[in-house]
Amino acid sequence: MLARATVDVARLVVPALEDDRDVVAREANALGVDATALGELLQLAVQPALWEAAVQARAVVDLDRWDRGFCPLCGSWPALAELVGPERRRVLRCVRCGSGWSWLVLLCPYCGTDDHRELGSLAETDAGGRTRGIASVDTCERCRGYVKAVAAFTSYSAPRIVAEDVATLDLDVAAGEAGYRRPGDVDPAVAGIPRLVREGRALPG
Image (cartoon, rainbow, N blue to C red; front, side):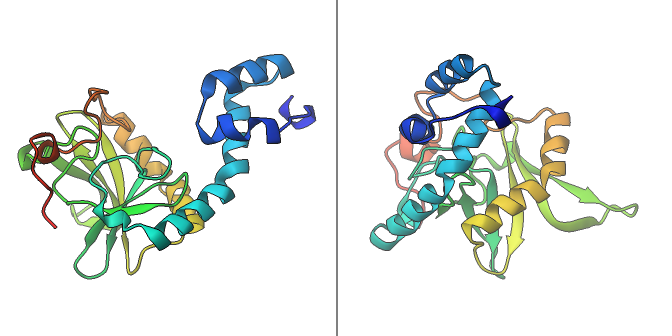
């Protein structure tokens, strides 16, 4: 069992930061523990360092200028999109390191489509068809990807983003039951690159 295993976390820090699952799997096999559980433990161990790295990055780089759908710091896909303030500015948030960057409302972070006919949302509704709560799911019919969306007065802290991700697990279940995934089915060569950027044009500021 993992609870009884002696894990040399320091030796596995770099593979954990790089999300090198092959190295983690080999270590898990050597220890006789579950690879998924060991991977989750290592991610939790390095997360405070990633949070601090994100803070340092924000101090020297304007992350809002990032024009990719994946995290500019650790390369993970966003788990949440904050709709910030009364203008509901969309900010993609990385749960792994806490980074956030502005993103167009009608733009899939996975396949980069901006065709409004292929972009939609799922939301909890009451018996009268009215939307319930402050969270929903942004969906893309082209790649079948989804991102959870939460309303926020101001951007959340990194620990709060983790809490929001856990608190909205019911939305992950609903999205999965509707046939959506995170990320969707994307071409690795252009994954996370918006269509306008692929065509050599800048995203609107």
